[in-house]
Image 1: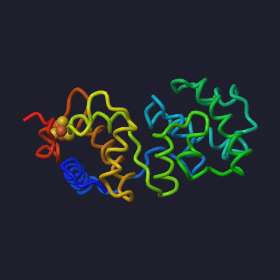
Image 2: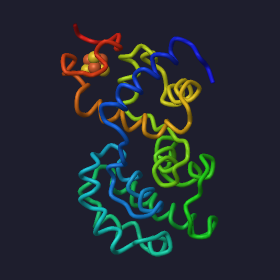
Image 3: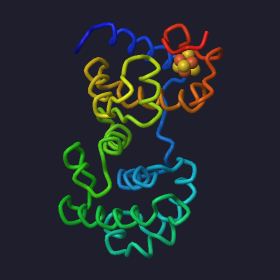
Image 4: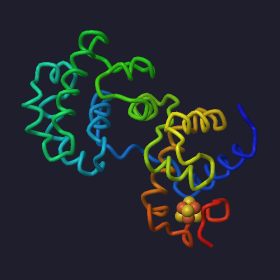
Length: 213
Ligand code: SF4
């Protein structure tokens, strides 16, 4: 594990946010790893609460990969058409369910390589599933995490999510990765809001190089 100034800052920010917010769960409604995988896929460029409005009906009709693998993209599309990119998402969901049935014995795999072999699943989605469905190390880097890491001067303007993930995971203990991502995302939504950060009410004000004093 790297122990440099970046590591010290990351750990201080983690500890402070953890004291403030504690252990946070995944806001996407789900009962099984499969349902979380589908909810994460649906959440691309879409708010979690909008996803949560359609998934109860979706999972009632297609509770597992076996059921969804028999559906057509058109049938799924009728349920998810209030969400952005719904046509692509519906097509990916059918392909993904068919691959789970055919290649993974109707279960969700538990490795990054296998998860990212599924249609529509990138590293961020795979990390959400690893951390929240299986309690395995996973550090999802979404737009909030990217933005905050840049404000902390721990990432450069053009750093990719993969680079930010790698930088963080080399400095933070694996058992903290998943909740650290939740802490940053929650802080980005509630306090460090894009374009109007609430620096005066921010619990990491003294640690943050981007703070408005
Ligand atoms: S001090 Fe300001 S810029 Fe830094 S994390 Fe807090 S709200 Fe965001």
